[in-house]
Image (tube, rainbow, N blue to C red):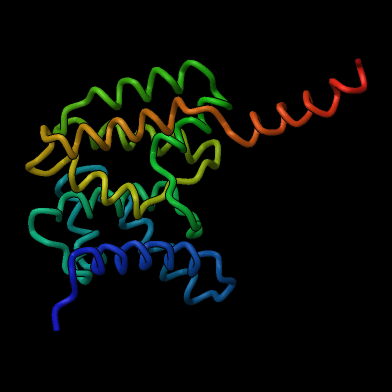
Length: 196
């Protein structure tokens, strides 16, 4: 029985998250193995020659040939900003919105530049953005990122599906924070009768 590409992607991302769990497990042997694996994945971002260090980790999950480069990129990005798995669908636009709240217009400019990049320079800009997110400890949903990058860096990077991904990222980046909006509305509602 063959597993679907979606299942292989899911298993791959879970394996990445397990590297973070192992590196912070408190079990010396496991910590050492996982830290070494993360270091190899980080090095893989520095060039095609160094990318070979990631092959064992990535290819054991049997990526489709058309997605290999994306899987290698996501593995390196994860190693740059490893974190525990989180629930919920969070796009890169949501992560960048959180960065904008901390860094202001500089994050907004970075995000706008990212949206306009062609697929051949996208990896470079993603590495910079993930480093920024890591420096402010802002989470990235690597499962969502992998799915999105398969489209944005694949053969259909000029298709409607790629455009829809960019629109979703932009919507998540620019949409209001509903928890803050709801809280301020509740405060206004409760304070107005007292002032009347």
